Length: 216
Ligand SMILES: NC(=O)c1ccc[n+]([C@@H]2O[C@H](COP(=O)([O-])OP(=O)(O)OC[C@H]3O[C@@H](n4cnc5c(N)ncnc54)[C@H](OP(=O)(O)O)[C@@H]3O)[C@@H](O)[C@H]2O)c1
Image (tube, rainbow, N blue to C red):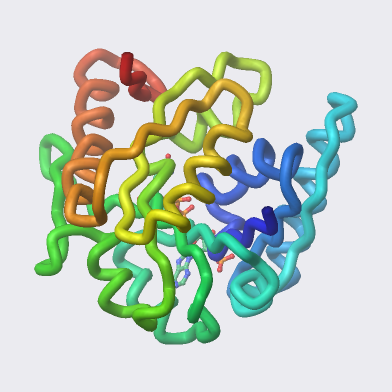
């Protein structure tokens, strides 16, 4: 699968590129193609050092959308609407949202938009021919990047298009040690996104790092 990452220079984007580019072609995007190239070069270096394969290139966010079959939106929630309005060509694409709208006071809390979740807002903003799924919402960037540490996590996948959900479940299963679970339609995405502030609170109050989940 050709996997585009919009915002691929960020914490989770770079982490995903490190693992996904070992198995699939990753087209890593940024508002500045030069920044994407630098992140892509860093991925090649890190994986070469370990003797691991890497198929990754750095491009603009628009090129990442145009060239990918599956587009992962690795952008902070507060910049999502502006980013999507600057991009085009999502018709027919499978779009993965790992986006979690989170607020913070003394503790972390779920702060969804009126649509109910980030994924549902993305579905409203994108053309109706785009096929939106949630996935990877509950895995910390640090876990993606720690290539030598165990990476045994569960991934809840929500979406309304069965074929697109099948492709995203396949993408999850292709990443060693990850297990995908069909969590139902996009209407379930608020629950998936809300797990992440829970994980952040558990990490904070237990003084843990990179807390994740496993369904068993
Ligand atoms: N970090 C985690 O552990 C984690 C875990 C699960 C899910 N998520 C979700 O993944 C998404 C990305 O998180 P992150 O921690 O990787 O975010 P981040 O590092 O803060 O930002 C990701 C990328 O977004 C782009 N960006 C920043 N400001 C922007 C703006 N004003 N307009 C357009 N693009 C902008 C930047 O790329 P360029 O400057 O190169 O364009 C940046 O590298 C979030 O929605 C988050 O909820 C994160």
